[in-house]
Image (cartoon, rainbow, N blue to C red; front, top):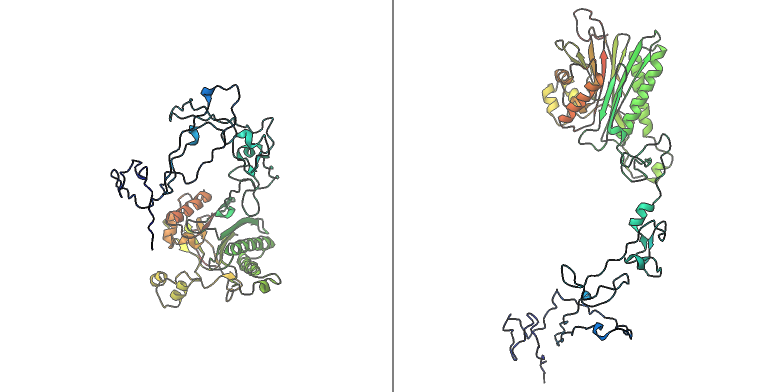
Amino acid sequence: MSQSHQQPALSRCPGCEEPPVAGDLFCGVCGYDLSAVPARPDDRPTMAITVPPAAPAAPAAPAAGAVRWPAAEETDSSDVPAPVVRPADVPGTDSGGRPLAEPDTPDAVSGRGAASPPEPVRAGGPEAEAVQVRHDDRADPGGAEASGDFALAAPDPRAAEHAAAPAAAPAPGAKVCVACRSGRVDPDGYCENCGHAQPRERDHMEQELDAVAAVSDRGLRHHRNEDSFAVSSTALPDGSAAVVAIVCDGVSSASRPDEASAAAASAANEALLESLPRGTHPQTAMHEAIVAASEAVNALAQEPAGAREHDAHRHQNAPACTLVGAIMAGGLLIVGWVGDSRVYWVPEDRTRPTARLTEDDSWAAQMVAAGLMNEAEAYADERAHAITGWLGADAYELEPHTAAFKPDRPGLVVVCTDGLWNYAESAEEMAAAVPADAQEQPLRAARTLVGHALDGGGHDNVTVALLPFAVRPQGAGSACDTV
């Protein structure tokens, strides 16, 4: 025989706390279902608060000061916890062991007893250690107990901030952090004091000599600057000056393109500074410099012994870059290149014709040279800027291009990567972008040209070197005559 469980009568409705009418299944006030076991309300605590037994009162204490505990409400068989006494309603101690305020001392806002704040512990005082340490227990009577805070097994940041030893001063000549101005920068480019990442030196580079200036910028889309340049001057055997500008553009699809461009620019510049003072013809010196740059880039692809065995399946793409250079020596202008970086001639008299002095090693240039496309069609193709010549161990064959010119009037030599000429492709467009005072202020003009590329979108790294070519007018003739 089945038996049904009879619920005892509820003294109060769990929903509205009103006494229900005997025998009702629903509360007449709020409609609460009195036959179902109610869910526990969210606004009531689910854990009973254990009140420690009161300490025996001192014999001298008056009876009027005895604690009056509020009577707890009844509980029913529905397991609904009865309302509990709030901690602030009764005397006790706070988390620091201090007595709470008396019940008859109302809070200005709530009217309840207000707990007196614990006395702060000042770091560096006579009782404080050099670096305060908090513990999980209260074994230290003068630690967490005195501070009024819960003890933690960690240094107190408020005290450690003031007690920490100052960062060691950087050694003479070492890089100093741009953020904290005190920490030393480690080889990875981060401050050892504050951890701030430092701007990389190659993100924006500038250099100016008496007769040449160069500027290189990372651009707006690339995460690093893969271009590099080298500018210098030396003396020929007759005592006249020779000015050199080398500009290299790392091939982004290759590995370590930034290292390739830096190695090529440095090697070519050093080769020229070594050969020109010996009396080597500038055009021959340029050819040898490109070969030296190629060997420097090839050396980057060489792996140390055992490296390939350690990572035999890693794809190796040899470092690669393009190179373009110019030499002003003995009234001649010598240019040399491999790849698609360019040299432009911009006469001081802008009414005179301008010229592009190099031909790209690119798919588009090959199509035009072969007569398969006109220039507009070739450069509109998506393969237009695919290069067919570069410096690197995986290059098909090194074919340095050199040419010698003898300008008959003053002008400006513009040596640049495609990060600039993409925004001023024709000789006329480049001349229009060059400031009128570029002859007198080449560095400011180089900055202006870099700004022109950035204003156009800055999709690539931008590098330009400007060499003012000063000669006396020699009559009518072409701006550039090939020797």
